Amino acid sequence: MYEQIAANKRKTAGLVALFVILLFAVGFIFNYLLKGGVVGLVIVAIIVIASSFFSYFNSDKVALRIAHAQPADPTEYARYHNLVEGLCIASGLPKPRLYIVDDPAPNAFSTGRNPKHAAVAVTTGLLEKMNRVELEGVLAHELSHIRNYDVLIMTLAVTMVGIIALLSDYFLRIMFWTGGRAGRDDNNGNNPLGIVFAVVGFILLIFAPIIATLMQFAVSRRREYQADASGVLLTRYPPGLISALEKLKADHTATHFASKATAHLWIEEPLDKETNKGDTKWNHLFDTHPPIDDRIHALEQM
Amino acid sequence: MVAVIVIVIVVVLAILLFVLAFNSAVRLRNRVDSAWSQISVQLERRHDLIPNLVETVKGYAAHERQTLEAVTNARTGAVQAQQAGPAQQAQAENVLTGALRQLFALSERYPDLKANQNFLALQEELTSTEDRIAYARQFYNDSVQSYNTRIQTFPTVLVAGMFNFQKREFFEAEQGTAEVPTVQF
Image (cartoon, rainbow over all chains, first blue to last red; front, side, top):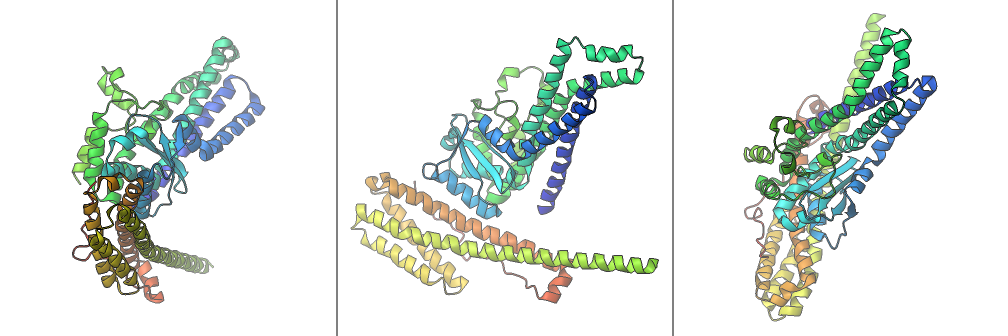
């Protein structure tokens, strides 16, 4: 288990590096096409480093604010607090901050950069619809995300994907306004390398948000299975999480305050899938979560 | 010259390995100790909740003296058994669990009591404390397992032999301890 966590940390570091490199690449091409020169490069570097640091220290707050999460009152939500405290004793984790999202759809997510700076949020619908063992199963799943250091990469992805999307979007607008003049100067300048650069850069700028999003999905799907497994290792009671997942499956209400940027954080895919029926294979590529039936099946094998 | 450098590198590596092995053994042993004290903390928490519970029930069902006294006595027994060995402690806690079960079964007959906010809060607290005791024991056993494995495997086994790191015992559930009190809601 601890070896797995160490491996997870390494993978997380790798993915963060990839994100930063992608961000740098987008920034440099942006700069090259706009002929920003050395000053532009320095500005790009500063933006990338600053935004990386901002993501590292603040992305949990961003994620909580996007979800409209409020701190959970210890007396009003005594059961929620008690269950988390019990699970923290079982896992040896410090107690995370607890939040409530006022939403009838049952769902939960965790965020933070390490176990000492972590937060768990559940919807009021989850607290109403789940009984004690089911709620415990869900909370154990969320604490496992914290223990396995999934929260860091998952939460960073929220802001990183946002920044990359924002940059590319910004660039495409500038190209549109200037009629692509910055690019055409290169063509006239008899510089074949410059043309290649411009074309590759343009493609990368278009695809960077898609690459970033795909990374976000690849990260989250594999780790959902892991969190299910190590959550059950905490409660030593698979039927609790199984029946919770079955309740989540039966419930079709979409989580109100979830957006595409935060979809991968939640325990169950929060966005309504009924709306984009039709093309099945491609849809799965963009799923943030493995199908609930597969997760239940994996748990039943234990 | 080359030989000297090689020897120096080997010695430095050996010392580094030794330090790392020693530190990891100490870290895991401390985790076992803190896990053990966590169990006592949770048991004490349970003892502290009981006088309040007894007072609350008295307000609604004062004439159920026998059950109330059984709970109070069982609590006193459990508090005293903390100084005794683990086996006696486990037995005293069992008696307390049984008495509490009786008390909650009795509360079924008093709708006013069952609707009392204070009683409901105490019931929730006691249930989660039972959970925490179980979890604290589980964490203790998990910690003992990693500690024992570490001091029995290479290279920590060498350090463990030198500095007398002892194997720790698991917390074994006595007959009946494994039973969770079935509280009727």
